[in-house]
Length: 97
Image 1: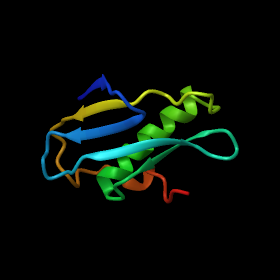
Image 2: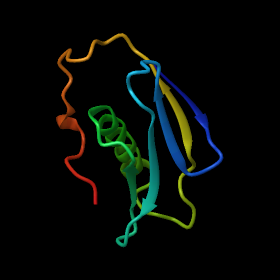
Image 3: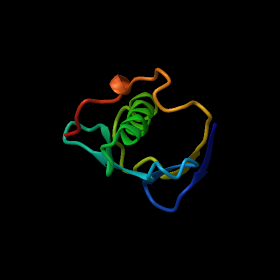
Image 4: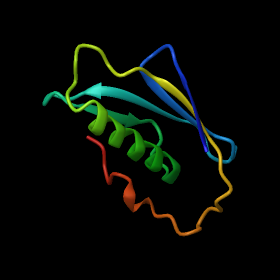
């Protein structure tokens, strides 16, 4: 389950109710080709899942960078799926530029 709320900046902060997982902060940056990129401060498995979800949303809903960035958000994620239950981080991007 995910709860969303707006933030006052263009940063997406993703928190998990499992306090073993640290918050992930994702900034939104325009690259030289005119598209939005999500750049995470956390390269852990949890951070890679979060980054992948945000990048997919950017590509789908904001295909071209405009004068203003998409608004920032605060996410709170919870669930009861145990770690190692068969989900793969292979869905996450391999690297960031």
